[in-house]
Every structure is written in structure tokens, then in C-alpha cells.
Length: 394
Image 1 (spheres, rainbow, N blue to C red):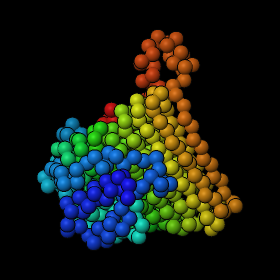
Image 2: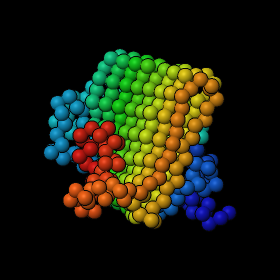
Image 3: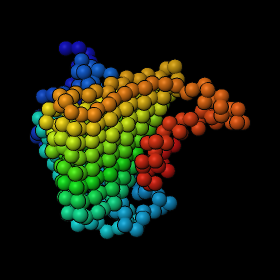
Image 4: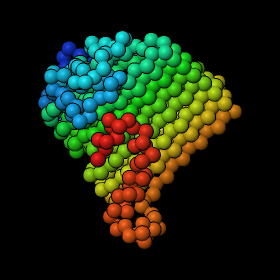
């Protein structure tokens, strides 16, 4: 057995020992499958070194910070933040009353066999947990402020969402960590016919923090799922959104931006599968990669024979700002149906000299011009965020 395998096994044993009362199915899957290895295709570019550098025994839930009063919620917004234990959620000052169908009680995630690593790790932890079942035609605006107050934090939010016909949920999540912390956000959502989920995430961490998160979303006919995410900081941040259009005739929109600096590794592995005809997908992934950062994108779109008249567009764009920066991008279309309109593309570029020259000819110095171009590159994603999150992006 190699030293790398021994290190992975030792780290995982330490984590399991620190959580002796964890659900048996989560423990079993982690013990049987272990941590991913580089020979696995979807993990071959992802260095788990930052995760293994964390001390499992030191990771503990930490008290939460309440959102600043300057960011007072609108009158109809339900805003929750971490409680003093770090494993529960409580209303923020000025929050609207909790809606019917919302529960903050711990709930066990029902893991499927061969569940993704973020789901397996999240299932090992005790929370915080939020369950929300919206009645037909109900509408809720929900904001979560997930900010542990100290370092060595263990944060494993689990959101279980069930939207009935015509229900609408606008969800905004600010998640931030403060050093040597592990964040494991996981979302499970079921959208009935005509339901809509607008989901926005701002994920910020220090240079020693690790983020492993994802979602499992199932859409019925006529439903809409729109997800926007901005990741900034971290030593390692890997997200794995999984979307299934179970009957087709639904709409999925994915917007992701990684602001990658220092030696950060930002990894996005998405999968969208159509199980019926006339579904649509609009996916855009962007990364601003500076210093020795490493951006990874692997986006899978699956269109089997029964998914005729699917319309799917996937685009990955990277802007390199340093000669040491690195990008691995792999958009994928797996198409069996023959009556479809599916496109994909990937670009890797640097700041254009002609654009910088144009700005300098208008009296804008090079540094300011470069910053304007960087902000312009990010703006397409940032404008998808609600004000609560957009004003927090550095």
C-alpha cells in the first residue's frame, strides 16, 4: 500500500473516530469507498492535500456570526444564521416570520449507493439542517448567513427542499470560513410541475480552508431551476451540482464563477441529465485564475434516446492572469437522441493587449484598465446574484 493511500486511510479513520454516533450508512460508505484517488477520472486533477492537512480531531462546530445590521433584510425575507452551537439555525434580527412548511430539526440524508463524496461526508455530520416543503403556488424568499466565528470549524449545512406545483423559492446563501476549516454544504431538492427554485451561493474561505459541496436536484415538467455560485479563496473548493430532468420539458440554468488566486484549487464537476423530451439547459462557467491558482471544470450533459428536442448550451471560459496559473477544462456532451440542439465550448485567454491599449489611449492607466477588464469578465455572473451576496464579493 502506497504512502498516499495510508495517509488517506489514516485521515478518514480520524474523522470517523471524531464522530462515533454518525449514521451507519454514512460510516459504511466512507469505510468501503474511502477517499478518491488520482486514478479515478473525475478526481485526477484534484489534489486532496489541503483536505488531508486538516486535523479531523480539531474540527468542531463553531458559534455563528449574525449578519451585519447594515445588511438588514427586506420585509418579506426570512433570514437565518448559525446558532451559538454551530449546528443549528436561528432567525436574524429583522427576519420575516418562519413560513409554514419549514423545519430546522436535524434530519438524516438518505444516501444512495455510491453517493458523491460531499454527500457522504455531509451525512456524517449533525447539521445545521433545514427542511422546507412549500405548498402549491407558495412563494418564499430565504437567506442563510453561514459564518462560523472561529477557525478549525466544521460546517455541514444540509438543505432538503420540496416544492409543490407552482411554488417558488428564492434562496441566497453566504458561506464563509476563517482558517483550517472544513465546509460540506449539500442540497437535495425536488421540484414539482411548474415550481421554480432560484439558488445563489457566495462561498468564501481562507487559504487553509476546504470546501466540498454539491446538490442533487430533480425537476418535473415545467419546472425551472436556476443556480448561481461564486467561489473565492479556499485551499481547495470542489462543487458537484447534479441535476435530473426526470420527465423533460423543464429549464435548468447554471452560472458559476471562480476567483482563483494564490495556490487555490477550484474544481467544478457538474452533471445534467435529461430523462424526457424538450428540456433546456443554459450553462456558463467562468474562472479568473491568477498567481499559482488552478481551475478545473468537468461538465457532463447526458441526452439519452428518449430526450428528443433537447436544447442544451454549455460554455466554459477562463481568464489567465499569471504564467503560473493552470486550467483543466472538459465540457462533455453525451448524446444518443438524434433530434436535438446541443452546443458546448471552452476558451482560455489572457487580458487582451488591444483592449488595454484602448483603455490607456482614453487616459486609464494599465493597472486600472486591467481591473476594469477583470470586473467586466466577472460581471455576467455577478449580476445574477442578489444584493446580499453581490456586495460581499471582493
